[in-house]
Length: 298
Image 1 (cartoon, rainbow, N blue to C red):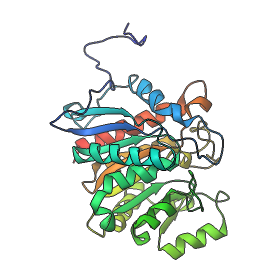
Image 2: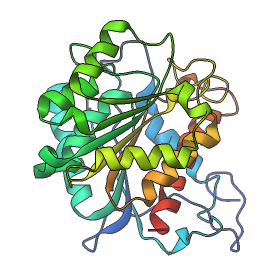
Image 3: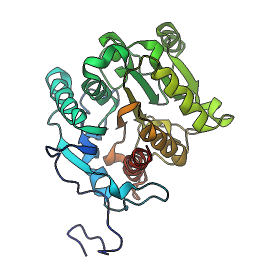
């Protein structure tokens, strides 16, 4: 048995336990941004990056058709106290450093407020040409600064709303005012119901085309509360009727496969509120690996 209580098999190497980011850079770099202090609902999402790292050890780095094992992985650890303005600046700087030396940077939260420093750090000077794709049940266009406002905050920072695509927006989880605000910003909205009748690959292809129209990098926000509550009980705002786990995993892989995507984040998982079988945290870990499989296929 390993130090983590897991079996050891030299023919079945485990994922995770990746080294620090070295001078030579990495294909995929993991960074924890454990935001939680400004969440609209009580959350222990700050515990999630550590929980996801633990869950990664339960999986291998093997995926048929994708040479994931050939990738160079790195883990730069967690940003300390990433909430509020000073913490966000630390998170933004850490994300910028990781992104400058990685083909794909994956930020694990934390609540959805992490999307602001994660995207801004990844975009850097390319913000004016950048794009954003969200997999989210919510528009995240609220006033103020919280996990309900990252998309509005990014637009106010200079991101063009016409290069934002929101996939999976749920019925009865938003308001007419915020739907109107999204339309006013020029955001493309693909609601959950539309995904019942369209191939996911086609939806993602459309999203990448729109978000990448400026010629700049794309950040993808994987808010796990877009999933059905049965598969994401550790997401306080998940609703019945959301995406299946395989659907979000497919979107993560498609994101990783696109050379337009520079970074992504995994948000809104509260590891302290998960089911006993850790299904939400384990899904978040698999999103990291699916993004890696996509990257390996580039």
